[in-house]
Amino acid sequence: MLLQFEKCLKRINIFLKLIGLTLDSADSNRTMVQRLRRHWKCSVHMLSHDIAVFGETIWLIIGLVLGATLWEITYLLPCLTLCLLGNFKVYYFIRHLQHVNEAVRILRNLQSNGKHNEEIEREMNNWLTFLSSVTKLLLTLTILGVLAFALGPFLITGSYYYSTGEIKLVLPFLIWYPFDEFDIRIWPVVYLHQLWAGKCLLLFIRENIILISIEPWVCVFSVYGPDCFFFTCCTFIHIQFRILQDNLKEIVKVDARNRPDVTTDTFKAELVQLVNDHRELIRCVNLLEITYSRSTLFNVVTSSLIICATGFNLMVIENLALMAPFTSFLTFGLLQVFFYCYYGDYVMRSSIGVGDAVYNSRWYETGALERKYLLIVLLRSQKPCRLSAYGFTDINLTAFTRILSTSWSYFALLRQMYHK
Image 1: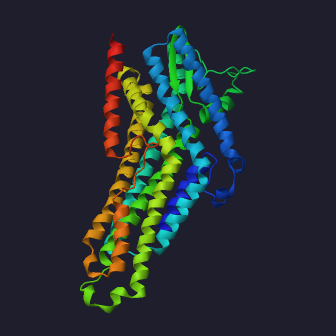
Image 2: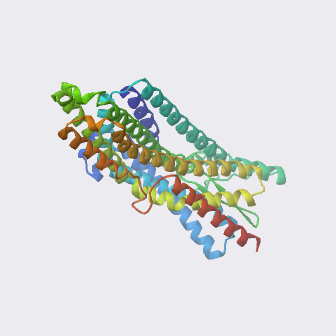
Image 3: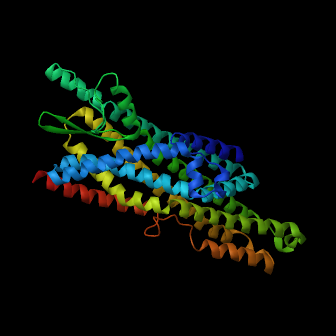
């Protein structure tokens, strides 16, 4: 089990390295400034990314002042929101690296000490397979979305050349440079920089405004990397809760009342170990809550906006080349928030199951001291382990249905405004 956990951490580190981050236990003893110096590549990436976000915000303000259309604004908002979400996730991930490392340490210890049977082993393999499928699915959607958005300028250039016979180079977004950025010798460098850091383009062709969004690598992986860590921790927390439930059910042997070993030091040590494991699991969930609760709040609040605006864009866009990236965008937005709620729901349910395991054990065949330990576990399990959006709402499947309901309400409102 420990080997599988280490493989998952290795995979997470690969995704985090794409934005200049790594899981380093030494960060627990560093200040925020020292962490930023240690992960200077991440600081450079995010600075470049935030410059693009600032430019996009300026374009949004100008559009609102000059009376941009509803379609233009909704075309811009999902991309801007995703970039801001990436900022939140990376900032709080770095800020709480001591909690991240502590959660890794707890899960690593539990994985190395856990005892389980073949049934739990099969269930664990199923969950790890599901985790791998989730991360691969989101990664595939991310790559498809990035590639589709990145091809946008070339498609516009090709379309312009087909209609006018002239080649008009375009860039991911409109920024003033102290040189001619459309010089064929400079354009590729500027394009690659904007593709990596920026994300929104305003192309002015004749008298029409055409918006092309470029989903940056920094933006999507600043969301994807921390999310993978969250999904992985929730998976192994659920597995450990299942192992704990199974061990609690089996710790009291058949006809234990008449067996002398029921009150031996070995039995007490095993029982105390289970109580400590339960406490560590609760602590691990609390560490995840501290690390992710604020960024999760922003995620929940903006998910309805992303889903609504992206769905609206798919409804009004007639160009198939522009529909493809937003299809990936919408699918990614739906699945990202769904899996957040799904894993949060399973952590809550598996923590409640610990109390049922105590009830189903042969607690009545133990002594008074042993019943006291079991009572401690039972009382702790009465308060489910919850992952929340900064305490405003629990992250579970019920929250996902509310997000979908809110998204549909916003979508209906936008559609009504658009057809007026």
